[in-house]
Each structure stands twice: as C-alpha cells, then as structure tokens.
Length: 417
Picture 1 (cartoon, helix red, strand yellow):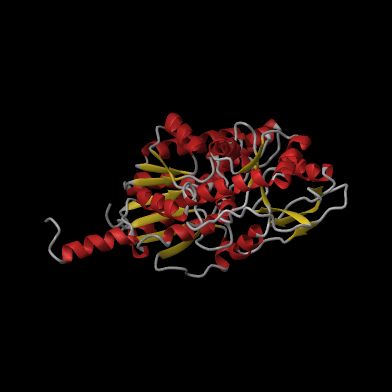
Picture 2 (picture 1 turned 90 degrees about the vertical axis):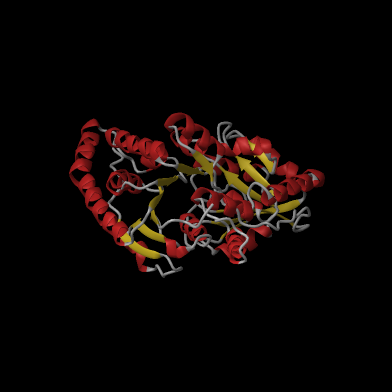
C-alpha cells in the first residue's frame, strides 16, 4: 500500500460528533493524510451552520435537493410525483453535479470515494463519474432500497435510483459494506467487489461479569429507534415482569432523541435524550444489560437483513451482555449465532423476551460467560484496530507505522530502487 492519491469524498453528512454518520466520517478522515482528501458534503444548509473545521482537509458544503416523495398510495398522486421528480429534482441534481465537478477540478483529484448514505449522493455520483473519468470507491452504510422506501419514493423513481446504484457498484474498484450479508448480496446481485468496513471503538475491553447492584437490574438503550414493534414488545415484557427480576427493581436507561415510552405497571425509566459519546459510554457501562432491537416490520426487511447497527460496536466496548431482538433473517441473528453475546429473541413474543431477561438476571454463570464473549468480540471482530485496518485497506493506504518504517528504510539506503 502507498500514500493516498488526491481523493474527492462525496457524502451526505459533515465530519463531526452529532450523528453516527458524522462520527464515522470524522474518525475515518482521522486515519488518513488529510491534505490528500477533499470533502464535498451534500447536506441541508442548516447542518452547515454549526460546522467547524475539524481537520486539514479541504471542505465545501453543497445544498441537498429535497429527496422525499409523497407517501400517498393513490395512483394519480404517485404518477404526479414521478413527473415532478423529472421536472424539479433531476435538474437540481444536474446543477449540483456541475458544482461538485468544478470543486473536484479545482483540487485536481485523482479518485472519488462516494459514501452513498443519501439518494441524492447516489444520483449525483452516477452523473459525476462519466465526467471525471476517475477510479471510484463506493461506500454503503444502509441499503439503497431501504433509503428509497424511507423517502417514500414512487416506483418509477425508485427503479431509476436502484439502476444507478447497481451501475455504481458494478463500476467501483471496491465497495465498502457494513456486514457479511450485504457483501454476499451485493456480490451476487451487482457483481460488486466488496470489503467490510465496520466501526470499532476500543481494543482494551474487559468483561464486566458482576451485576451493578443488589437492588436494581439496569437495562440500557442508546441510539435511534427504527424497530417500533420490537420496542413495544420489549416494554410489554418488562410489564410482564412487573419491572422486577431476580428480586431487584428493573430500571431502564434510554439515550435517544425520540422513543415512545408506555407502561401499564409502575415503571422505573430514565429518559436522558441525546448525550455525547463519552457520557453514553459511561451510562452503558453502568448498566447490567444492553437492549439491541432490529425491525420486524416487513417493509423494513432490507434494513434488517443487510444493515449492521453501529450501536453494537458501542455496546460491546463496555463489556456488558447484549440482548439481541431480531428476526431470524436479521443480520444480528446471524451474528449472534457465531458470537453469543448475551441473549437472543427472534420473535415478537413478550414471554420469550422476558425469559431472556430473566435468565441473564438470575443465572450468574450464564451472565459471566456472555460477558466474556462480549469482550472477545470487542477485542477482535469489533475492535478499534480492526476498524482502522479495514479503512486503510479499503482506501489502499499504509498505516502510519508502515509508512514511517518504509521512509526510514529508504533514508538509510536499505530500500530497492
């Protein structure tokens, strides 16, 4: 591997610390020679107001066209939406492509790294690549079909977007994906050359094998909520336990910008809203069990099957067992079968989920063994070192140690010509 060529990064977020995307982008850019990277963020103007330069990379924000469609199921409305996309959205993408192209030419970039986390980034990249005629590295966090459904795009627009997505993945030198299931599907469907890049938080995780208290059993949840039926089942399971287990009160600690909280029993819930990463880590470490759901809703199947929640990396970094609540086809169900990190419930069943909670709260030996698995996963599969290695392999650049060793070897005349 060598030093990175001048690279244009196209993304639907800004480098920062407010969202998962911002954090991932910021951390990946911290691993490279930032003077060789030029960041084009396709964002809502309001997102840029609070942005402060966080590195040596060149940065420019571009206004993102409105991506969402009308959720109406009426045929005429949907047809009108498809026509509207052609007369408003597509011209906006065309103008945006010209602006980003000029930015790329000004900085004399040699390749493109496109993080396809927005449908607009997908559409822009499809138009841009024939103009620049440069190598492409594609990067997928959430499946494009899920993003289309999330934005209520009509069928014609969705087919056009997916066709562009397919073309980009087939043309890309490498496509970074979030999990094994996504790699398998994209290799088969799009002939993509896939490589997993998955977030890791820490290399020094120790299993926390003792409960936090004799009076409380603390269950934690952090991050966005997309698994509504699973969450509803989870709250009902706590009600079924009367918010007590193993002779202790159950206390639920929630760190999220929005969740629905309801209970027909006297509940103990701390809703903390959004908290910075450092505090999230501290709060999770002070819990006994961490709840991690995936969506069971049929229309969310692409997300559940092909995504890998970044919050799992944060969860395992504290060394506590994780309660996975995922359909049988979910990526987390597959992951759990290889790495039993706590408890697993694969159905929307109050009794089954309550039983998983009860076992981890009442059986110290099981709790200890699952915590030890969590620590092993955090040190290997989801380690910080592995994440950094995956990013550098994807970008085809040397680690600082390797690069420095190479330079020192050449400096003393030991290298080959």
